[in-house]
Length: 408
Image 1 (cartoon, one colour):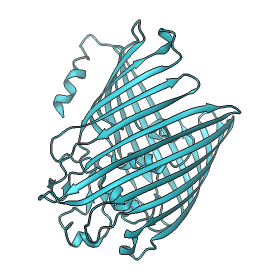
Image 2 (cartoon, rainbow, N blue to C red):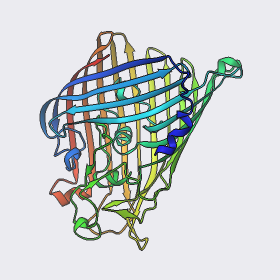
Image 3 (cartoon, rainbow, N blue to C red):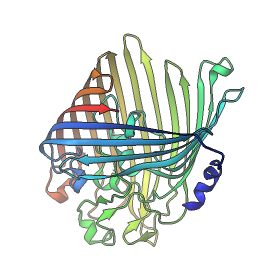
Image 4 (cartoon, one colour):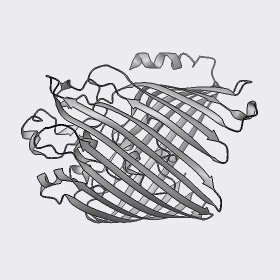
């Protein structure tokens, strides 16, 4: 990775003297009551981050640090910690250099990010340390982004600001090249979609669920998947566009392809060719309402060295949220639908899944940076592979959460 840093490091000259430091954070203390089965986090097939029962936890202790020089260059690092009784841990989730120019006379502003960062997908996780400001739990779509997707590479952004030319909208185009995300898709295949506020830390590996195929064609698969592994030295890429109407809303469209070679593996870590497109919008409505939503659809493929498919899954997920706000109150309701379609013939590895979910969240602003939240989650799913663990194919899971969140 050292050579990736050269273009931006060249921007830091000995003459640069002024540097400004900034530290922001979030502390989320949460009480949850969960009606489910063992969580996906520690290898189960439950869709929530918490196991069945009640739990008092530190759901997120996040820090976002920034060093900013006077030449528009900044260094960002984000760390998160969890003390939730399921998987307690602490570590980095992002670290990158960022450079952004001032707008030109035509309104063009350009930017670069270099390092490890989230691909610019989620419309929900836009608060400190990639937290969700309006709900306690992101959608299934963005929960998966937090679990298995991270870009290690370079991102370029071009923005055309409409106010400079009299247009009523801003246009943004982004592209990135990245490495170290070859096994992405493994967890989505083997535990399916889930709904969780837990982000995978950069040093973590994720347990692989039990299935008969692990004693057969998947016997070489490691017991834990490393989502940030690089197998084939082939960079992936993202392309996306966004049109933003100031004080009204935005629409987005994007494509992700990790370009992994799906028949290579090292020490039980396979390449998974994972591709998907996504689209989304956010819009203000009359009467203090706002509407937002996203959809994602794609495919992930893992093969034998002979190039026969071992796992070949189509997947999709979509959510729609309606929010009402009148300070200090905010109420958000979200509905979702998701599926995985298993196209291969591998015995003992049934990944077919279909489900729906509903979330209702209430947020009260107690002080400027202090929020009290409550949330109810209902998730119904049909997943044939649960019979391997003597769990019901059709399952309804429920969760009630109360949280005190402090941002600083």
